[in-house]
Structures are given as C-alpha cells and as structure tokens.
Image (cartoon, rainbow, N blue to C red; front, side, top):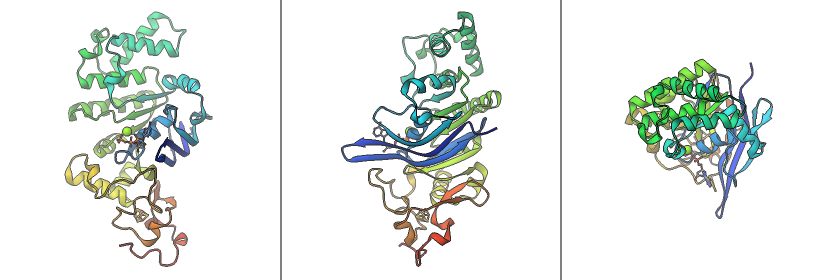
Length: 330
Ligand code: ATP
Ligand code: SF4
Ligand code: MG
C-alpha cells in the first residue's frame, strides 16, 4: 500500500509590504496509512502553515507551489470548494484553540450532526445521530452529555470534543495542530492515548504538530524537525532522538532534556526573518558547528545513517563542499 499523502517540494508564502514571508520553503515527505509523524520546531518556523497546506486550508492570500498528492489528486491546487468536500470526509484538522471552533450557542449534538450532514447529506436522521453518539463514545465522553453546550465541558473535554468532531467522518489523514497546548499533563496523556487508539482502529494517518518533544517520543512513529520553513531532519523517532544528525535537532533535544520543559526557545539566538533568511544554511548564525561552506551554500539533503533524511553539510555530500569549505566559521 502506498502513502496516504505525499508532499513534494511544497512552498507557501505570504505577501506583505516588507516582501514575501517564505513560511514553507521546499518540504517533501510521505505518510503511510496508520502512521504518525511528529512535526517539531520553534515558533514561527512554518508548522501550522504546512499543516494547513496539506489539507487545502491555506488563507486566501497565501501563494503556493509544489504538490500535495492525496489519492492521485493535488490538494494544493484544488479549488476551495473541492478542498472543503475532501475535508471531513478524507482530510481532517484538529485546531490549536478548541473554544474558538465550537459555537457556544450550539449543542454538542448539533455540532456533530451538522458536520455529518454537510458531508453526507443523504444519511437518515437516526444514522446521523448514531454516528454522532459513537464519535462521542470513542472519546470517552458519556452519551448523557450529547445534548450539552460547549461551556458545560472542561478544557480537556472540549479538546476531546474537537478531536471527535475532526474524526467523526473517519478521515484517512488528520493534522493535529498542537492539540495539547494549554492542557495539563494528565489530559495530554489521555489525548495521546486517544489518538493512538484511533489510529489503530481506523488506520488514520496523523501529522502531529507540537512543541513537546516528549509527546513525539511517546506517540509518533516518525519525526520531522522544521527550521525556518524547511525540514532539516526526518526519520524514525528512535533513530533521530538517539542519534540526532543535524545540530539543530541535537540542540532542540538538549534544551528539552536539560530544562525538562518545552525548552525550544532556549537555543541561543533566534530564528531568522523569513522575508530575508540568511544565505547558505539558515541555521548557520546559531550553529555551534558551522563551517565556511555553511555561510554561502544551502546544504543538500542526504540519506541519514540509519534511515531518514538530513540536510546539513556535516553529513555531506563531501564532493559538493568546495576547497577549504570545512574550516570552522568562527
Ligand atoms: P507556532 O509554533 O507559533 O504556532 P508555526 O511554526 O506554526 O508557529 P506559522 O504559523 O506557520 O508557524 O507561521 C510561519 C510564518 O508565517 C511566521 O512568520 C508567521 O508570522 C507567518 N504567517 C503565518 N500566517 C500568516 C498569514 N496569514 N499572513 C501572513 N503571515 C503569516
Ligand atoms: Fe550547522 Fe552547517 Fe549543518 Fe547548517 S549545514 S546545521 S550551519 S553544520
Ligand atoms: Mg502554529
């Protein structure tokens, strides 16, 4: 069985008066059915933009290039109407802030039933209700709460409701954008558990966007590390976490472990301006290992030792490094 979704050289940029913000700048990966890919990286590196692009949910002004192939169709090139039809039925998204996505005036039952009816208008009333209740049950929410309003639920339950809503139509691919921010550790663990169950039951492929490296270790098969619009390293979680081959991945893991928090922002320096990123490797101004070549040439993506891919001159290809290029930069 082939991948459920294939991203090929995806680029997304936003026009501003300062110039184009290149939020996603040449990203490629495949995701197999039932597989979970964790996407990590500092704030502003383009994670949400990539996630939205994958399900055809980019804001109006966003320009795009490359391909996102789902069942032989390019999601990135679809009209908003086509993409809308595909969402819910095939592609789902779990958003960062549950409250803004639930209508306070609508009962939970109405949220579910409206979603189902919009995508499957021919279903009978009883069937719609049955599916709504089933989705609730999968999230461990008692059926007696079916007719409650959003404000009658705790934050953690609302987050679960959001997940249930995104999954009610059993999409083949779901993007979960920081589904666990602002939640306590217990709720976080529950949600990871639920996502894992769903994947097992329905073979849903999942892109899990998070700041929490611990969640990735616990819940994901593969990880993609994003820096300034590019995926700089990707591979199986155990390979990448045990033997990070990109200096940014290494620093990311180190800051997380040493601070025992989501210490992503504690790597010295700050991420580049995506309107005018540095020449060469975008990480070079912050990289402890930077070499001469890094300041002028973008590294070439190569196979990781142990599988996966990495984009760093330390990993080669040596033949592409000019004479003297390996001398330290500082
Ligand atoms: P966070 O971890 O804070 O959620 P992120 O990795 O999800 O960050 P994005 O939200 O994808 O990052 O943003 C990437 C870049 O694109 C940022 O510089 C951001 O300011 C910019 N950006 C995002 N959405 C828009 C938009 N609608 N219009 C203009 N610029 C945008
Ligand atoms: Fe550091 Fe150079 Fe590798 Fe970039 S290419 S991460 S600057 S060593
Ligand atoms: Mg985001």
